[in-house]
Length: 307
Image 1: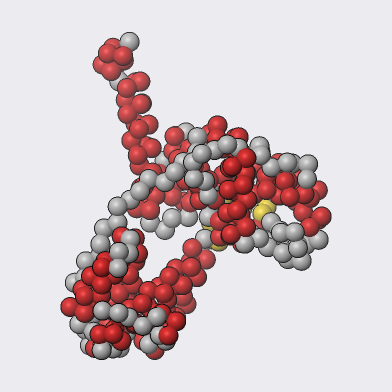
Image 2: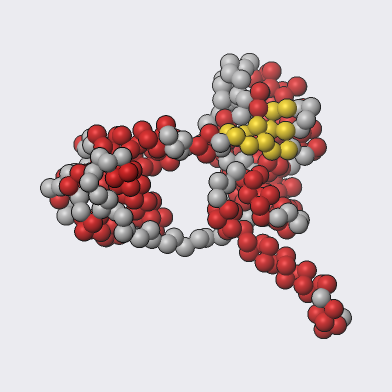
């Protein structure tokens, strides 16, 4: 079955209403809304090819659509998101009584295998942080950005969104607005604070700022996520790190190193801004390894065996 191109398909009014609900009421991040809008266009194209409308869909049509997605060899994560979109769409429409029933009520959410993220060793982080030349305008900015990515475990969208008002130098705190505009406070350790303060006082004014963003490009306006990704790649290459390194690698390394240092999972959840502890549980392998080491080191019978 061939579907018309996505660009030729306009969204159904009920789909538009659902996306507006997700944005305004649920407060989902714009990136998530954009992904769901793409899913909506794809589903609408499938329905047009099937001769169906949003309001006449039955459960079997949803199953056919998910099978259609798998037949196009979409990855497991995308298929799972498409299923989550259908469940959200029809659940909302049924709850608002815009449809008599919910055809997605019995739709099972596919399980997505959880891949452990790449993590840098502390020595690799230290080497990478040393790459920017701290005696130049761009180098001082890059060093401060990399320090902050690792010190605070920020998402790249959170980093580029920081403004001068979000940093309290006296208290050593960042105010971060994460997914769904949820606010959290993150402490910044002394070394990162020292590097950040030096950038703000001596180097940021040289960018001729046109906005209040913390980190600026050559034109004095805020950096983009792509620009940050590119500079991270450049400095990782200069450091000779062969792993795939992205801004998110710093976030994973931040969480892993905290847990290895003795932090509990709940504290790391709060620092990362995860709404649900299940999102943080991907790092439980770190705690398991640490508990095994503690048991081996401190249990009296284990100490006898390893003596």
